[in-house]
Amino acid sequence: MKTRIGILTGGGDCPGLNAVIRAVVIAAAKNAWTTFGFLGGFEGLLNPVRARVLDPDDMDGLLFLGGTILGTSNSGRFAAKVGHGEKREIDHAVIVEAKGNFDRLGLRALVVVGGDGSLSIAQQLHDGGVPVVGVPKTIDNDIAGTTVTFGFDTAVSFATDALDRLRCTAASHERVLVCEMMGRYAGWIAAHSGIAGGADAILIPEIPFNIERVCEKIREREKDGKRHSLVVVAEGARQDGGEFVTQGAPAAGIGPGGGAFREARLGGVATMVADEIQKRTGKETRVCVLGHLQRGGVPTTFDRMLCTRFGVGAVRLISEERFGVMVASVPPDTIGIPLQEAIGRLSTVPPDGDIVRTGRALGISFGD
Ligand code: F6P
Image 1 (tube, rainbow, N blue to C red):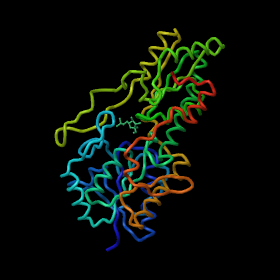
Image 2 (image 1 turned 120 degrees about the vertical axis):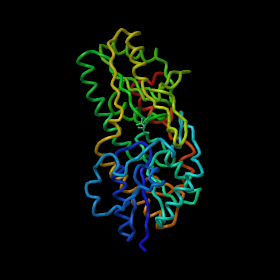
Image 3 (image 1 turned 90 degrees about the vertical axis):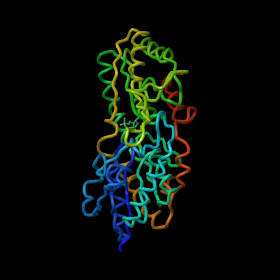
Image 4 (image 1 turned 60 degrees about the vertical axis):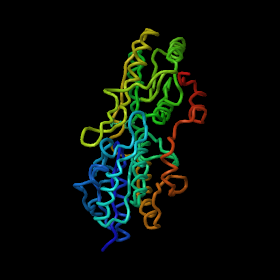
């Protein structure tokens, strides 16, 4: 029988997932391997198994197609994180069921394309006897051990473009525009796009903010005759001593069959910031939430390249029989690092690092 491998995409979707699938399937076919794609994220590994053979001849067009042809999920029996990122052990019976199905399909390895939560499930599957290779995905860019995750560059490009547009309308109407961006507990998207988009203030989770400092910046600009301002707020930003701003009911932890385990939904901090700015400065202040627009669309050239290198790298690690590892970009190479190194900690924006120092040197306020 030909060697068989499996692949699935887990967690929130992200530009470039299909480009990774394409690279894995084509590189595997060059080794005369067959690739099975599991549908609906990790749930596809459970009974009834939802899997289909991925034909290399069907990969045309996937390089630039957003979303994931395999589908994905970040809640349910395989949710690895709840609340504000607290890790959760997957039920042992679920791991055993997945391993049984993996063995019945005669697979040699499983490629898990996912973020921090999915990679921690990958580690648990690996501990349960499934030979796993991880691929780091997330627009949030918060996975340790790799200099960058795929999807981030596309999200930042979109966010920067949005700021360019918001700057024009803010200037025309002499308003303050507050733009909220994704990123969970890391401010990478906000910091990069904020600097590239010429924001006047950038609020990130790594630097708790004081709303009065943000208002001072706006008043200062006003004195200089600049009657509009652009404020970027990461969804995980919070006031010094304050709580994260979340949406909807608190994360449920009900369990299989009765509901879904899932993380808290961040969102709404921009509205709070805008209300305070308007109240304290008297400036008309509007909010724009970029939301899921950051996760959709065509991956940038940089991301297509990264996805392709990651996919090919994952197949190389399988052929070297290296499991329980994740492909990582460590320029100039794509290497394999232990999954444990990636999932143990989040990569966040260093508050005293070059990015923040660059912003401060330009007079950008970080609200502190
Ligand atoms: O992790 C990616 C991400 O897009 C975060 O930036 C955001 O907080 C979260 O997923 C949103 O997830 P959902 O679409 O499930 O609400």
